[in-house]
Image 1 (cartoon, one colour):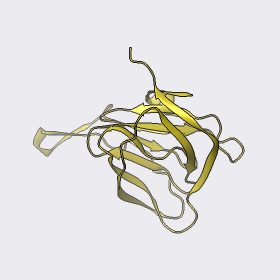
Image 2: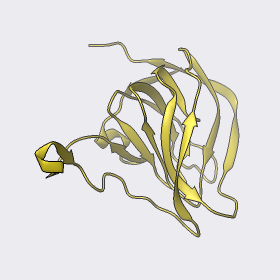
Image 3: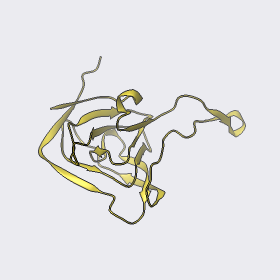
Image 4: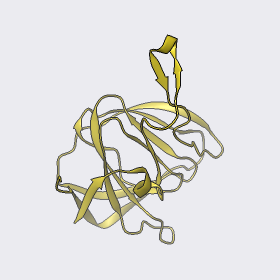
Length: 161
């Protein structure tokens, strides 16, 4: 059993970056807009950054995670297009295989940039919309490794409060 906790930049740092409002901004558009720039570091090898749209089905909880994947040639940034909560399941590398997984819940107004070569679960919205903008590597070459877990890991939410 794995309990998903609310995501924070500090807790998620070993796996990537949390993308959310905060920090310095520049006021633009005649003072009606704040621009928060450079919120994630794209890490791309032998390709170019591309923007795609993913339309994922909402998953129910508890969620059984049986597959982890990683992308050796590029980071992946997931940004909800509408209010959504989604599970972010990640694992450190353990000799070319996923180590012990961790689970986070990204809430409304949060996205994640999963680092290059970081093991992670598939896109898993649990409420709201499944529509996401994804910024990742587009190009030739093997950029996907998948590992089926011997036993699925059941993910639940941490109790509120």
